[in-house]
View: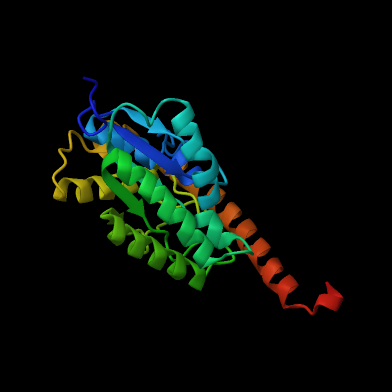
Length: 247
């Protein structure tokens, strides 16, 4: 008799989300920027299947990423050790944020993962998100994530307080290479507490050297980019404060 999904092989880690989970970008002190979810898989010593797409919101996860996983045969004969879902950042940064619509999509995504994974990891967004800041919408989004995750028995990785100069880029949205590793190590601590075996810490897998010259150059680049982001955020605030007749 063929094995059921519950008795079939375990396929490792599957991840849905946006550019944060897709990974990719600039080196940091010579360390490649890789997805936090990929680092989690490496830390667990498991295969990785990533379906995250840059710019994705929850509707993209439900409408495209899940379909991609099914069509590529990644969600059929067997279960995953772990399913990862980090989405909502692009939803709250949009002008059409709708908590109810987000919850419907998020619930569907968690249901899909819960049916195919031994464990599911849901990730909240940093409160200090974006420039201009996304503000109270992030709290609304995180409340939905936490509530739906509890209902589905998913673990919640709380990143509401996440952020630091060397962990988040000047846009206050995307993690740096070290930021991705920091997220992964927080996730691995949570998973270890839930009984998963962690084979290696991602931070032990990287090699880098920081010199005074590299640090100065990095600080200058960050300052330049931060000023650009701040100037754009100020311009947007001024623009939206004007009466419609003057825009």
